[in-house]
Amino acid sequence: AEFLADALLEEKIIEEKSSDGMYAVIAGERADYNLDKSWWCLTKGGEMTSVGINEQPIADGDNFEITNTPA
Image 1 (cartoon, one colour):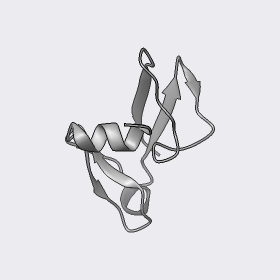
Image 2: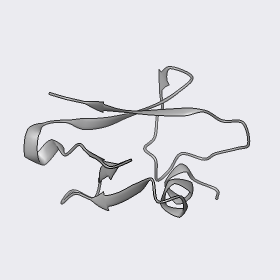
Image 3: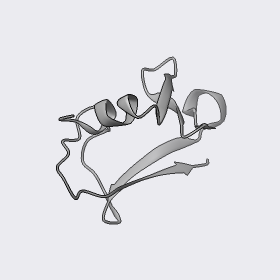
């Protein structure tokens, strides 16, 4: 896959988009800002990325963290 979202979809790690087009369920856990103000924070090497998972290019050896961030 070229982008992180594509790889995560292929592996069935992400699944459901919320009403605003963001992924709400990752690895079976829900974060939905529209429901409870929680959101997913994408980091690479501990630093927030400048793009979301749909636009995040990937390469062999990359490590990303996706953290459920409650309000």
